[in-house]
Length: 182
Image 1 (cartoon, rainbow, N blue to C red):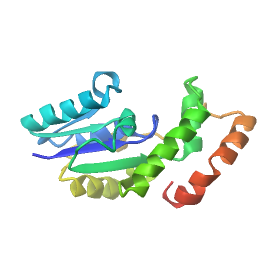
Image 2 (cartoon, helix red, strand yellow):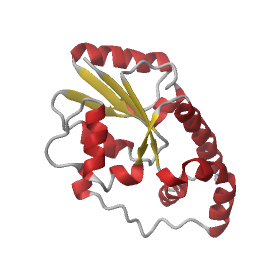
Image 3 (cartoon, rainbow, N blue to C red):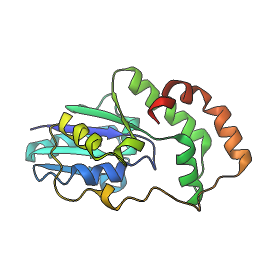
């Protein structure tokens, strides 16, 4: 049996990816089970229990908090343009730029340690990319993909210019490192 763990920041496509991977009947891939974050020990217990039943995976933004110590056969980090994340969270009334910056440093550390990157932009627009990504992890998606219904435009999610300027300044390091993947 095999396991996979994929993390990112909230609003980075974790639900979309979990739904896509879960179309393989040989896998159980959950999105933030039981509401998301749990102590790291409980997360590993879920993986151990899920693996005893078959192939198990989680696509969960909270995993970033215990990703390093988590055993899984396949691990990935989703990267989405942070300004797009801010726009999405602003529209929902939950903007926390300092948390986003801290979390991106955590994700950067995971990537620097060798965890492979999943491009949000490509996974939501390129069927071949998402199939290749899944097959690298021994997942074989079937049927309709969520991308077949995906509409990335959100005209209501414009952030105030002062927040955008601050975000661009605070995230300049991230764009230097990962701008070509976004």
